[in-house]
Length: 211
Image 1: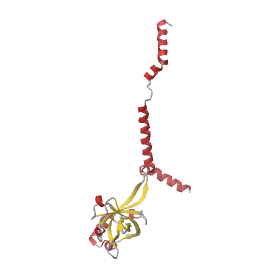
Image 2 (image 1 turned 135 degrees about the vertical axis):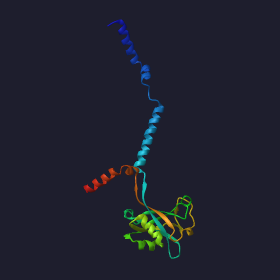
Image 3 (image 1 turned 45 degrees about the vertical axis):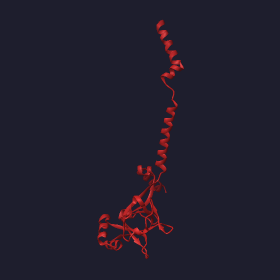
């Protein structure tokens, strides 16, 4: 081995063994890198937690008409649903009623609950009787097709209707047969269940089969 080659090898070994040279070749992780990595893991943890444990309401929607008691006070509404959506409604489910004559962005919606569900198919004559207007009844039937109806009872607080999301308006604004839109909460699901519905459906089916 020549002297020049020997000197080159020794220099390379010394360079590789030198801590300063090693740091130059592979710099140590800085606190900034650690903070950035920790932030990424924290954000990922928050997103995973939200996807697994947050709750998103699942609703069905239908047209409705305000109904009064014997004293002429609004106590609820009659809501109409298509056959497929109406069969998903049960007594006791929470309902949110947007009244057409009340600004939703200012006063919000009336909170209520499903009181009864008529599972019989509703004829045009029945819809007309409930709506109080043959033309309106025909529009409802045309919009929904085969129809079911449910009775919604409004919640009250200190003798006043319970409104959510705004300033409470006067109850007198709710005239008999005033058109509304009802959203009934039929279920709550986590975001991951909505993103991966097939996975959870398969698990439920597997559990039922095991039993």
